[in-house]
Length: 275
Image (cartoon, rainbow, N blue to C red; front, side, top):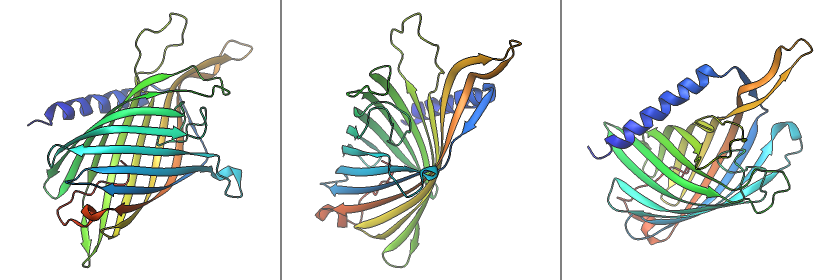
């Protein structure tokens, strides 16, 4: 089948992630992060659409519901057929060093990219694969970031739709996405990085109230895989650093409005709010 090469790549990434986790010496978990998002999806002919989304980030330990920053997401996706689609994307962050997008901590406040998506039925389930390449540009380096970085992303998703009444439906979904920086020619004195830099495991329940409105509460656990600077005590024993996994629990709520006449088409493919 045509999607088998992507499945093989996905399996390879998952095996690498298991190896990265098993080999890690240390783990650190941050406080809960709250990440709501509002989306407007403009339905075009066929299944094509234009996406505009805005999110905001708040950390639970800050108190007072203060949002630290946010991100604007723009995108267009064209469907070749019912299984394959592609399109350009653009993310604009409020801060270069905050990393307030769907991957926390990824530097870059101007990130153009392109995606390739494949969806297919597995019995009553829908299996999706999303491969993307992006280039994160840092236009404000006040946080001391190392500069612009290119990266690749692979997301796997599995979901099922349950009808509730005439118009309402529930869409439970599980997904996992890995992000890796693309290392072209690295200087010899630069620190060696992990093969996979970020991972994101997410569980959600999409609630489609009608063809034009849906919302999706979700939880996720993100992991940043780093090689931290080794620190030793007076006896030379390592007390921290080395291979470290930085984990962040996230609570989110996505609200999407579907606009345009094509949004009412009965045979239209409705993507999850995690575009």
